[in-house]
Length: 290
Image 1 (cartoon, helix red, strand yellow):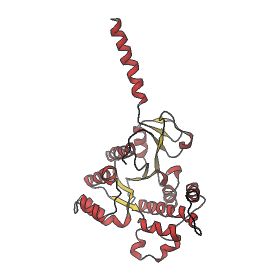
Image 2 (cartoon, rainbow, N blue to C red):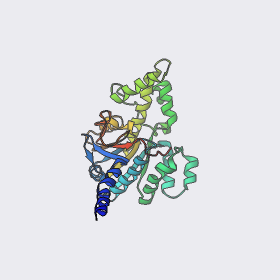
Image 3 (tube, rainbow, N blue to C red):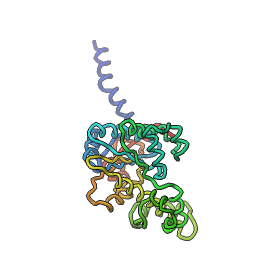
Image 4 (cartoon, rainbow, N blue to C red):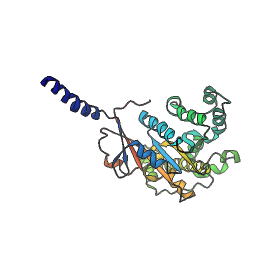
């Protein structure tokens, strides 16, 4: 009997504690309080736009993206969109969503990220299944590259068709926003040289944010939530994409989610506090998708 009692105590106390030590992630509110997924889902359900900031190789973030999207779809209609697809590929993407071309056809005619199959195709296929629009929100990368090399003025020479793939000109830009100040510092530390080249580093980031914000706003629908997937840096601290959305309509209801990596998920590190309405802390030892 004593041995059985001891065994019972071991099962009751030791196993749960061990399991807790292996928790792969924890969600926090912007105030730093631990919350459950259902609270994040409920808040997202009251928004017009959800900016889901990911670490691009985080398996946890990609899993939660599809779970959040499925959860929202049970309550309302959705429009989906992503940084990982560029606006000039929208026609090809629409053909895939309509079943007119296969995944191979999409892959050969659109510029898909290397991890598209594992990380983003499930989201696109969910939109296809539910007949939701999926918006390629990002600026074609060649134009962001031109801004980095030559500044915003280089966009003036684009054709009318090319201009339809970016935010309307001139690009609104506030170099004092903390996100772009940090980008400027990153440009300096990376050794970018040449006249004004370091100043253009955050401009290239801003033209992406402006374009994503423009296409999100353009595709908002009544009684529908736009769920947007982007790198966390594009929406952290309620800046970047969110800033551009608010410039178009200050009343847009936006919920932001950020994904961060920590050595321990049991508490939110100071540097990660208030980054978003909800912060997903992923254990640094969790396997990544690449």
